[in-house]
Length: 188
Image (tube, rainbow, N blue to C red; front, top):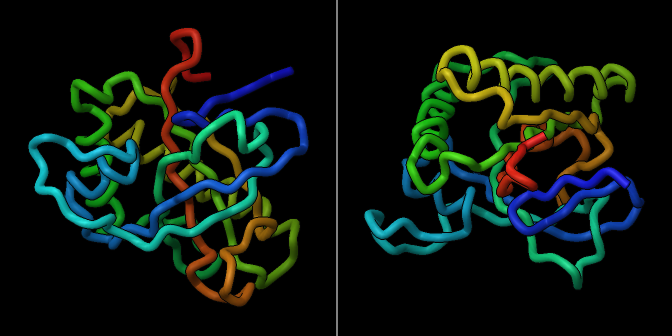
């Protein structure tokens, strides 16, 4: 069985489900907010404050809930039908790269999961979600010189819409950025 662990959450090929907490950070979230979202911990150099986003739960193929804790991460948004990063999100990903380059997170692995709203065909949305995840990966690797071996991507199209919002809601157009420790010293 192939298994991937994100923070303490292990994803496997078995079709079981679990809830996880993923933050909806503000676009201009700072280093400290990003680090809290990625690790669930407060950096000793950061001021202590409430969680910097609105957590939401989602269902994902995963190990049984009683065997793991929730994943850590957050998501960024995209325009309708687009996989382009705005200059604001490029600046945000630069801050993410700074966080992930810190000495205590230098080995952390990422999983980028692309999502879409429910407008358009499922086939188009599947491809668009994969393109969104790859766009974030390419920016981190190309512009930020981030180690591509630390990143895997996935696209789930419109299959995992945010709870309590309509399928057409623009908040569904996102890439989730999930973190995990390396397994056996490797990210992939």
